Length: 112
Image 1 (tube, helix red, strand yellow):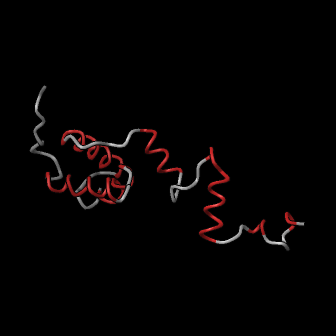
Image 2 (tube, rainbow, N blue to C red):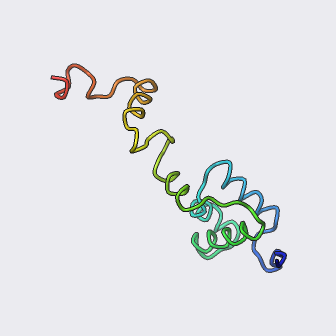
Image 3 (cartoon, rainbow, N blue to C red):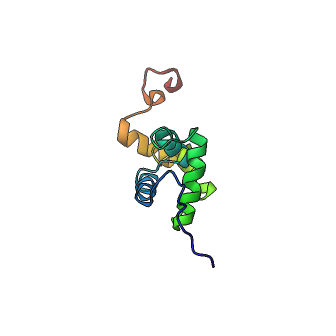
């Protein structure tokens, strides 16, 4: 297996790649969000080119990337509680966290 060497003409140093990966892993940012956040700072032409470069650099460093399914689940839920398969559990959590739904109140048309 060929050993990866960091490109000499890369816009990011290894330390910067590691710091970007920490944002990706710890903050849950997507590669696209990282691209939008970092492309001007590091001299990329667009957020997409920065995201593509980060993807290649992460893979080259051997970092674990989220697969397509995990990325979709992360993008589709804002708090990690909503799931189509168990809507009742989500509604119970929401009531405990935020109080009754508008439809739970006695003066709403749904409760009549």
